[in-house]
Image 1: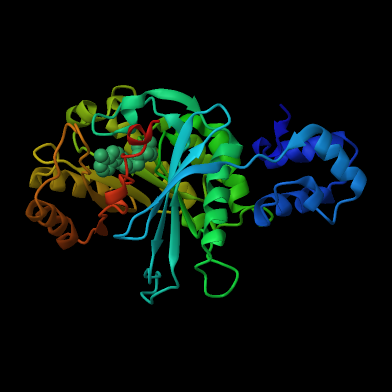
Image 2 (image 1 turned 90 degrees about the vertical axis):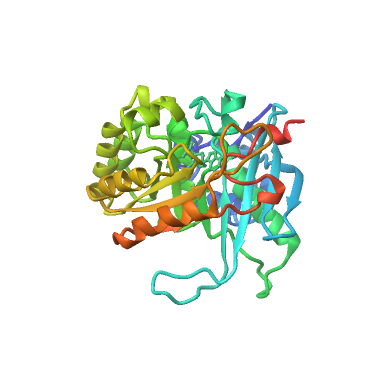
Length: 365
Ligand code: SAH
């Protein structure tokens, strides 16, 4: 099988072109065809010479991911895709249109469309509350498979053609909160970020991309030191407030203690000048006490941060329960009253089993 050109990072595509004696300016042309116009054949790249197209054709294919299943939630309009990979494995992404999302200045923006993407098939991190963890790690996704989820969702919206301006809606935000641990597939994820944010690539603003991690401290530090990692947003899945409590639900804490992870996040905030987002999955009787809220408040005092409380999403056979609305509110107000920036994130797509941590096993076919 020929190589999928979507698997080449920007710099490897550039080196390849120069090696073949092609022109440097071809790089931007090719990237635009691949990522902006999403063409599926080299013949459509009409501003390239016939000869250049032939060289490309001899070496590469353009392989997009096709969704084998799509479910749109009648409740909130989110769509879950199941993408089939070339080796028959599957991976999931969730498209979440948010109408009238608020902008920073408080005015209502046009619609925000967030795509939640996967970075691995399965996951090796073994978090006790997470459905993907049950699969264990199957393999890393390639760059073409990470970007392919975005191209596939974008194709779907064009077909769907709900955009009023004739051009159709665009994916405006990306979160790496699907299957897998993005920093465990570090090089491929950073190459993908390069093309997601490149003006000749998919062209999404760095501020609108969030990479979410269990807390691989060395990778967080590396991420903070290098573009594009240092520019996109980082979220840490905190989920517990004591060393012991975190070890119970997130075994990675045995390797990287909470204190070290928070220190790495602090470094990220200093270098990137971004805040870090702490995600906190709320589980009844596990981490929803006011003592936990106090400890979060203390952690947040050390670094620029905001907190997203995620009420636990139960699934068939899930080991934890979601706290009552009353205790979620009590926890929220404790933090809000102490001037922390805190939100409650009720997951989208619950009725299509597309919520955080619900990707994977339900759709294994
Ligand atoms: N590995 C990365 C990204 C994938 S998980 C990470 O851990 O951050 C994305 C988010 O979903 C994480 O914050 C995780 O804690 C949360 N999550 C996992 N299972 C969940 C569940 N059942 N209910 C609610 N949130 C869940």
